[in-house]
Length: 136
Image (cartoon, rainbow, N blue to C red; front, side):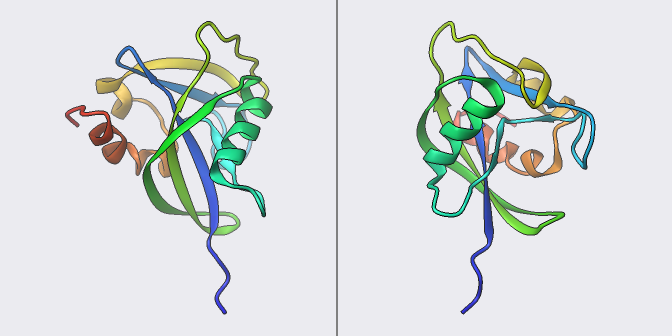
């Protein structure tokens, strides 16, 4: 029986025409690049559980997964992975703690193509924009 492809998740927060993005700390293959926050789904975890854990670990906030909006495949040091992008809601006025990132940004939807977004997330952008009814 073939082993299941490993899974990663990206949390998509879209408010007032802007997307929440985070800049990784230096180091590793994606250091100092922008991403939609998220990470690896651990064995036995659902996407929703992984999203809640990752957002608490990376940003110190509680989130609510709303719906799966896009998927793609990418290759990392650990092999092929499926990346699932989920639309999330975050609490009004939440205070972010940066544990894995150097900064957070709210990027206007039309400007998402102009930032140094990690390749795996970049592949999701057309699907994400379509989901929110934004002309790519």
